[in-house]
Every structure is written in C-alpha cells, then in structure tokens.
Amino acid sequence: MRKLFTSESVTEGHPDKLCDYISDSILDAHLAEDENSRVACETVAGKGEIYITGEITSNAKVDIEAVARETIKEVGYDNSETDMDYRTCKIIVNMSKQSSDIALGVDKALEEKEGEGISSEGAGDQGLMFGYACSETEELMPLPITLAHKLSKRLTQVRKENIVENLRPDGKTQVTIEYEGDTPVRVDTVVVSTQHTADADLDKLKKDIKEKVIKYIIPSDLLDEKTKYYINPTGRFVIGGPLGDSGLTGRKIIVDTYGGYARHGGGAFSGKDATKVDRSASYMARCIAKNIVANKLAKKCEIQLSYAIGVAKPVSIYVETFGTATIPEEEIAEKIYEKFDLTPRGIINYLNLRKPIYKKTTNYGHFGKTELPWEKIIEL
Image (cartoon, rainbow, N blue to C red; front, side, top):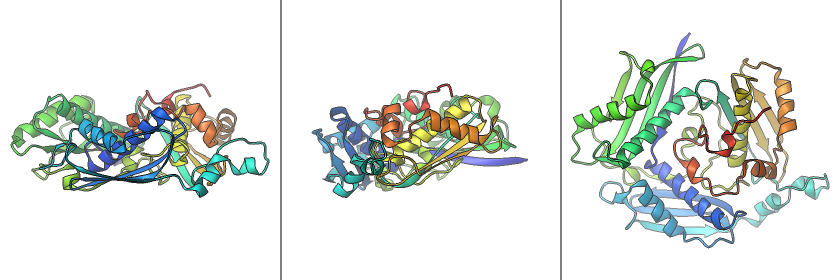
C-alpha cells in the first residue's frame, strides 16, 4: 500500500523560533553562571516589540535585555521596515522567581519526604512525554522531518553566506514522502517559502532555491519527474518575522520533535531548565527509543514516560514497537528499568543537562543531532 506523509520545519528567523531562541539563550546565560538555575522563560514577539516573562531563580547576574538583542542580531533581524531591528525594537522584561509551592516538590521528592529511601528532586510538573526512533534514516529519525530540517538549515546557510542573494531570515519548508508500506520510496512534494527583499528577482530566486537548496539537500534518487515543487507559492514574501506574524515560545512543538510522525506529550521545550520533565524526560525518552533501535531490538520504537509533580519516579513507562521488536516488549521494558534512572536527578546526571547546551537544540529539531547527549548510542 502506498501512502503520503508530510512534515514541516522553519528557519531560525521564523517568529516562533525567534522566541524559542531568545528563551533558550536566556536559559544558557543563566546556566553558564549557575548550573542550578531554575528557569521557565517565555518570549512573545510582534510588531517591533519583544515581551519576556516567566520565573527564574538563580544566582546568575544576567542582562536579559542584552541577551535578547544579541540573539535577534545573531538571527539577522536588522530592518524594522520588513521584520525587526535588534537595535531599536522595544524589549519588556517581566520576571519573577519560581513559585515556592512548585519549589517544595522540586527540591525534595515525595518519596524522600515519606522515607522511601530515595534522595532526589521531584518532577517539576505532571505530564506525559514521548520519545521515538526508527530505522528510516542514519539519524534514526523519520525521513520527512529529517529532510524538512535539512532544507531549513540550508536555507539559513545560503542566506548568511550570500550563496543566494536577497534573502531575509524568515522561512518555512515542508516535505511530503511517499511510502510503500513502511518504506520511504520517493519525495512527492517540496514546499519552500522564504522571505526576501523587495528588489529580489523572483524568477531567479525560485531557480536558486530549487538548485542550491532543494537539490543540494535531497538525494537525487528520491526525486523524479513527478516530484512537485512549490517555491514561494504566494508569489511575494517581503514582510516577515515578527512584523508579518507574532511569535511565541513553544508553539512549534511538532517541528521540535518528530514532525507529527510520532506522538507528542504536549509540553514545550524551549526556555525550560532540566528540572522541567516536559523537556528532560522527552530527551530521555528519545535516548531510550534511539538505543532500542540502534541495538536492533526493534525497527521502530516509541516510549512514553509520565510523571506527577513532586514525585521522583515516573508514574508509568510504556513501550510500543509497532510489531517490529526482535525480543518481547516486556524484556525491552525490563532493560529500561535496569539500565536507566528515570528520576529527574537521574536524567539530569545521565545526560549532563545542567550545562548551557540549549541554544544548540532550538533550531532544526531537538532530535537527530549527534552532538547532543541524548543522541549517544550505548549497548543495551
């Protein structure tokens, strides 16, 4: 049976991703000075203004406004007429400390309070988190989101290196893969929308994007005469970034994970330190799922973890291999319990999550990047 599946990605200049990047830059700045910082940072961007709010408890002394301006500059926003200018945009910072009620559960887990022999922090919130891996790509990620991310990253590269002229930071990509059963066989459709300057030659721009972005990234054996290309299908994309559309931290959770190919627990990642299991347990679930596939215990694997606020141990662990397991799923679950400490402290220590690594995660997906600790392969 043949079927189509689509995933999308966005560039670092997309207004939502700009907000994610600002929030993670603020997180990293605090962790660089105080690895025990508690950070929950939200950013809103729109019409020449940046609003930064949330809760931070830290010994670090961080100039949040300066970090935000430097981040906007790094992305490439320097024109208030078409998107945003890092020099002149208005930045409002409204921060408080972490709620003392939440801190009660995070500082000392319920198990420790009740004398169960566990000395650990509790989960920073209740919730459910998913991790996924499959054998479709070298990164053990689904092919649609992998190609969409690579296209977005290349779109940013050709802009910053002026390989393609007249580009601005905002952009989106989308890839539709045709599957035969569970096997990807070809690229059916590619969509690229990129912001550009008002004086850009649109015909040349489309040609350059097709040759220097799409065909540069997508293997030729996945493209054929039936592949459809939609490059700036509206015809014009001059006004972009926070001027064209508002941005908000955490609004691209499907882009951040598996492109809709696997389930998502609902919690966003960016701007949160590792005591927030929305982030850290999602990273751990990916680590487990990837290693199950890498160790050839299954061709596909989805892991669900769930937590209660203030409780250290996960409430549940669920393993789904979609009929591809080479050993019983019960044995896989036993390996997980034996190999991994899934308390918040255990996850933080195992993945070394108190380091300022989070700006590396923000753009082009939180998974599939070999330099990140949850992507390492071990023997199970």
